[in-house]
Image (cartoon, rainbow, N blue to C red; front, side):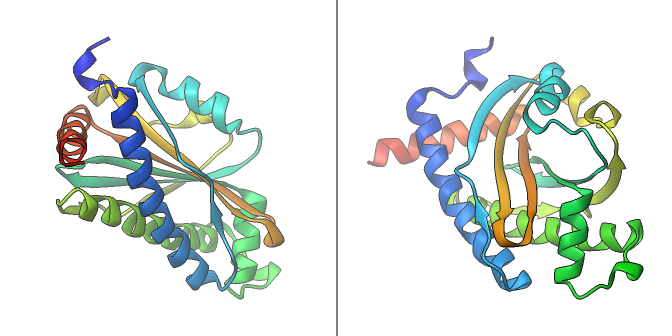
Length: 205
């Protein structure tokens, strides 16, 4: 394993603190939009080979029914992709919260809502993280697909990079029975950028 693209314990702890700040911003934004209290679990951070990504997702997320998967590319020194995964029941419950009636809900309506949720989560989380790291990012339009299993995830990201930092958290509206999973994948070059910024922060403190 290339030690240059692995985070040591201090680096991972520092990134954890930065992600806590970023997810706090995302929690506030999503709570305001849906007018319901949301929680984002403490982010889990892991560096893996991209060849192991599908296996990791199938183990961690355990998709055993229809899920909507939204993928959005992140551009800049902090680059990679956001992946938001939510099951159909949770998607329907979000649609109800947006004011749709049962007979108005279809995959197109659900996809539009999930795109909006993805944009909120992405812009809040990554923009806050980028600000903490004194850099800027831009986002490509997200794309939503309905998958029956993680094996159907046809993502070119897996073939582009050797390793990836996975930063994952669970979005939960307990009273509304809404739960989704947000994952942030970073490129090899971004891992090097993150390490450089984090070590500068650590040296300052």
